[in-house]
Length: 378
Image (cartoon, rainbow, N blue to C red; front, side, top):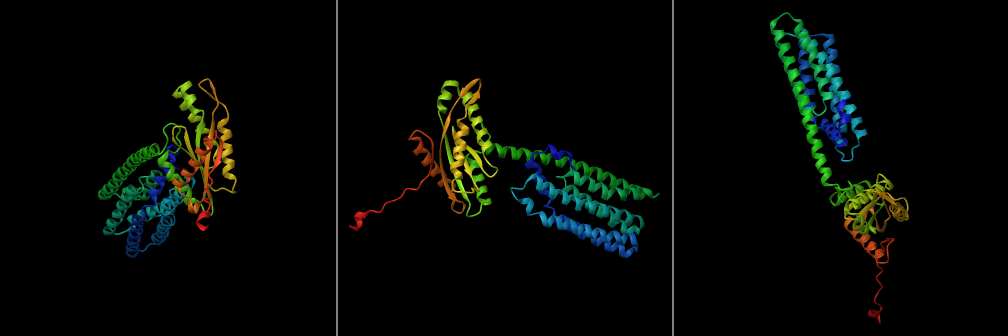
């Protein structure tokens, strides 16, 4: 397929593929234009090959419309994967190239046998098709450029087969505009891909911790809301608040560069422990938040907290120094239907502060039990 696709960042590639399915109106206009001109030419120039190509082109045009209608909502999913994007792109390309092939054969045949006045409509339809491809498919040149070549080159060849100078000039104009359209597609693609990549990079930087590349406070809420959207109302979500033990002495003894390297190592261990449905975030200093979703049983949050504590407590070798630290963890749980990030963080932080005041460890948030004031009934 497109050789440049392998060099594109995943987010850029997905957005470029999604742009293909915003072409519903131009696709419908092209389908109706083709059908109208095809019926007109076929009625004026009876020819079995032309009639066959008219019906084949109508089927291909309907297939193009069907693909766009079928997938246009699905490509708008923010969670669209690269694999799904490739699947949708292949279906779009198959329908689009099939129409281009039949359209090109119909136009060439019609130009060969139609009356001189009818050829004006044929050439106009070719120019309209080329302009539509240049405008709508410039984001995916591996589809757009072959479509233009397949659709227009046959008519150029037929035009040049006539000895008349007017036909030669018509073929030359088609070839010149075809070359210009291809150049425009490639230039727009390069510019759009660069702009999308740059925009997504800035968006990623704004939502990532500059040191660990973990989600920052801004991205934490977005990711949490995304987890809620994928969870069932009866699923349980846990939020873990982590505070590293003995981290300040590392900074004081070895310096901040070593402390920064230690934070990177800690973030790496956290990411290695989590499933795809969970994520960790650094919210400042040596403080981290872990969001755990889709828990199978009630004790799963405690098991993850223990795994995190054991992993972080393993010794580190940084800048030639053997360093050992620990972590204290407070966590809170809620049903997805009632989960609120601010409340869960406040509860987990309350559990964290309580366990740190006792020397550190792991604590689950337990709601306070309010005893009734028996004196009121005395």
